Amino acid sequence: MDACVSPDYLKHLFAEVLGMPLTEYLNRFRISSACEKLRQSDAIGIEEIAAEVGYSDAKYFARVFKKIKL
Picture 1 (cartoon, rainbow, N blue to C red):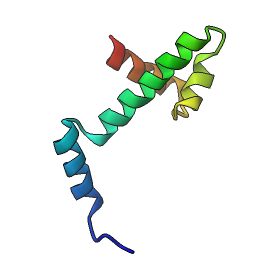
Picture 2: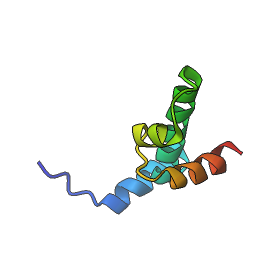
Picture 3: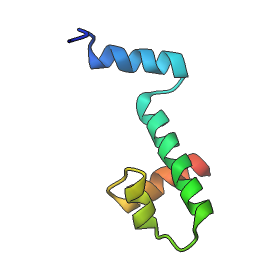
Picture 4: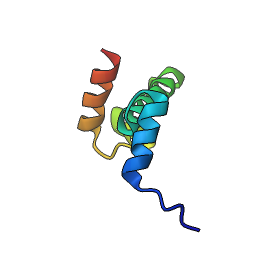
């Protein structure tokens, strides 16, 4: 069954309801998950945490992490 709703319209509704764009919400969710993983274990590396929360590039993950947490 097709809902006949464009992806752009859904993004608009998402931003309207939550007050932020979908990508910002997703980044904040991922960084929050990364922080929880860091609290659970200090022995885990940044590359592993980045991959576990959905970032394939650890450098990009670090930039997003700094932007959100600092």
